[in-house]
Amino acid sequence: MSLLTSVDARTSQVDDFRVLLDEALHDFVRARQDLAPELTAELRGLILAGGKRIRPTFAWWGWRAAGGAPPVDAVVRALVALELLQCCALVHDDVMDRSVTRRGKPSVHESFAARHRRERWAGSARQYGDSAAVLVGDLALAWADDALVTAGLPADALMRAWGPWQAMRTEMIMGQHLDLLGVARREESLEAAVRVAALKTAAYTVERPLHLGAALAGADDDVVDALRAYGHDIGVAFQLRDDLMGVFGDSALTGKPVGEDLREGKRTPLMSIALSRAQGDPAAQRLLRRCLGSGSVSERTVADVCELLVELGAVAAVEKHIEMLAASGVAALERTDIDDDARRELVRLAGRAVKRTT
Figure 1 (cartoon, rainbow, N blue to C red):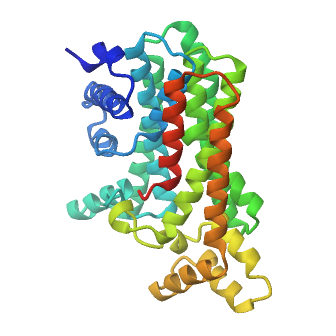
Figure 2: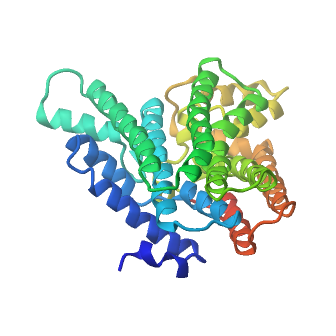
């Protein structure tokens, strides 16, 4: 018997939902494995290689929080769309950031470029790799729409979900553009960095998935508002933790080189706080801007900047803000009437999101 047919007895644990979602993901990809085989192979590898399934998990508990009712199997299939949307974002983001690895393996554009070199094909290996990766990301985005529309949801549930789904896609793209724009304009303000975090990560990682799940369940405005308030705060805290991991994380756990965000010159709230605190110290400002303005920095520079971020108190300030946002997000759940099991799980997920190491 399929796990999806026995889900009603298995909805109390995140791990059980993960099993259900992975089964739905495998089914979705398997049904399309003969379409655009080379692109699909890369996409399949990224989707089925694991991942934390954060976005569908928050959507599931948003649905549960609002008293979600059958058809449960259709809801699980619909949430496959969120994992496909994430794949689109990861593939395109890696191209833009020139990231060599993803989850400890070659990024999609690097994988295609390597094959181009092995086969001694004509033209530029890098251009081919980037172009093919863009198509993989586009395919993931197209399939994300397919997953939502063909999941078997009742028409009224699909109509309710379409608004948050449209908003989530647009906000993700807007956030990515603001990230690129911040680098191009040499943005240093904390306000600009936080806006990027809110759009690029918070909205499509936590807030909108919760909104989507609640909409599928037919939640009223009070429940949606409370879940979105929680989602915004936990989502920004998630990104702030990601910023710290991007500088100080263990590459064996994150699958990314230590200090990669510094090498990429990312305009994060962490760096904005550090620049503000370095006012009056020209040497410290020069060191920080060396990372922000250079496409290549040495291991020594990365180590020096890491040390400076701690000395300036920027790391401690970000940690304090993460704690504040986590508390604020959890408090938002107390302002409305939601399912008790879902409330407890959302509190637990908040802790995992802001304290994670991978």
